[in-house]
Amino acid sequence: MSAFKTVRLEMARNPGHPEGSSDHGYEFVAPLKTDGHLDATLFAKERERCKVRRFWKGEAEKKGELIHTKDKAWAFSYEPGEDDDEKFFKLDRHLFKPGEYVTIAEPDGSAPTFKVVSVR
Image 1 (cartoon, one colour):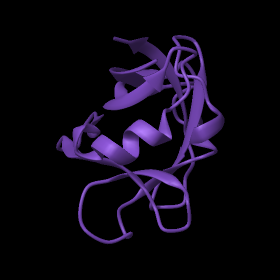
Image 2 (cartoon, helix red, strand yellow):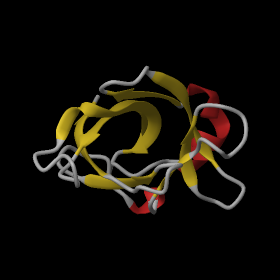
Image 3 (cartoon, one colour):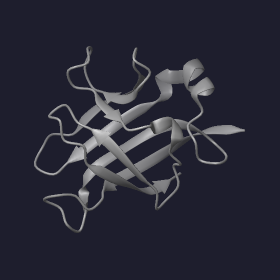
C-alpha cells in the first residue's frame, strides 16, 4: 500500500553549517510505500502531484516538481531543461522516515546532506 506524503528535509551538518540548518531545505510530496521507500509505479501514474518547495535563507523560495530524468536519476526541477535540476543520490534506495539522511547534488556541484525531519 502506498500513499502520497509530504516530506520535510532540513540541512544536516555540512561545511558552513556545522550544526545543520532548519533555514535550508525542502518540502515535497511523493508517493511512499508503507516501509518509507518511494513508490515509482504510483509516481509514474500521478507524477503531477509530486511538487517541491525549496526554502533557503537569503534566497527567494523556489517551487518545482519531483522528476525522474532520462538517465534514470531522481531530481527536483524548477524550470524546463536540466540546468537547474537538483539530483538525489540513490533516491530509490532511501527510506523517508524521520532521522534518515539523503544527499542532493545541486547545479553548482555541491552535494549537501539533508535530514528527514517529518513525513506526514
